[in-house]
Image 1 (spheres, rainbow, N blue to C red):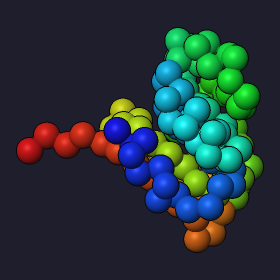
Image 2 (cartoon, helix red, strand yellow):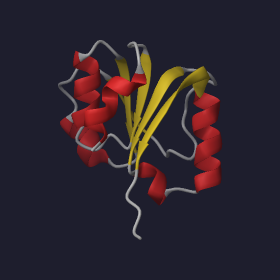
Image 3 (cartoon, helix red, strand yellow):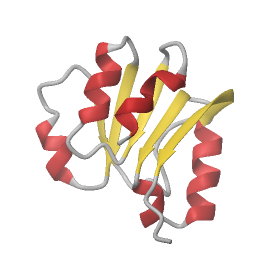
Length: 110
């Protein structure tokens, strides 16, 4: 779903696609000029991204293996709903450069 809102991330820079799955958003960001790091804990989606020109990392989103301030944007497609929200929010804040963007899509049952 967030693919329609990717333009809201601003000018291209370095982006982390958390829970990249099949890489649909990673590929769109890559074609828009972003340096993309695609992260997922499962191997299925990551394996499918093997031919793309992007960085692929298999890791737990509650403890991501990157230095603080490494990203201009973090994209989260429904991953937030499966994680420890406080720990994950702190991790996203740690990874984002100051004043940069976190774009999250989630489904909420009402």
